Length: 186
Image (cartoon, rainbow, N blue to C red; front, side, top):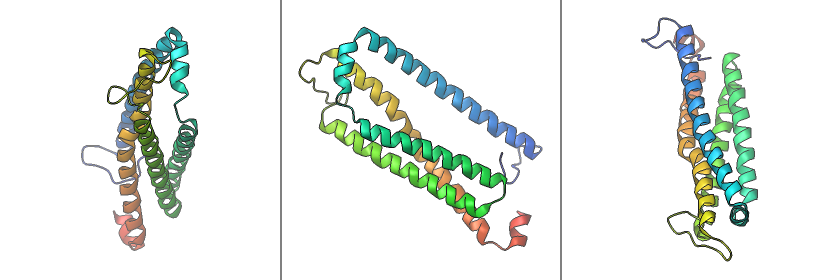
């Protein structure tokens, strides 16, 4: 999985790759636990307060959420294709796919920023400046708390992913510009 040079704490590239894979599985497990608990709690509140959650949902931006979902899926695909290109030693494709992934990540952050600005403008931010609309009661604020927690998770770790992708992209571009003999000796 990892095609870079062997780090000193590992005995071979297989051990280094297995460690990276284990780290990714641990990360995925923590995400499943976090989102599992969040979704379970949301379901309990949704069943307890169906009308209030329906009312609050009318103020959400379905189009923006749909665009961001498409950006996330597409960027995941481009990253998977980048990993595949790295394994196949297709440097040009790898560099291009890393750039595409970073661009899609930046687009995601732009749409999410606009969506959050709209939430602030409509006073849908829980605790900070939430204003109840006609017919709404306390549980509508809970809806927005769930929404903010769930959708706020991606923008917090997305910049790190973009930075890592761009770092890899720059490293691969630099490696492409080196003479063949130097690149292989690295």
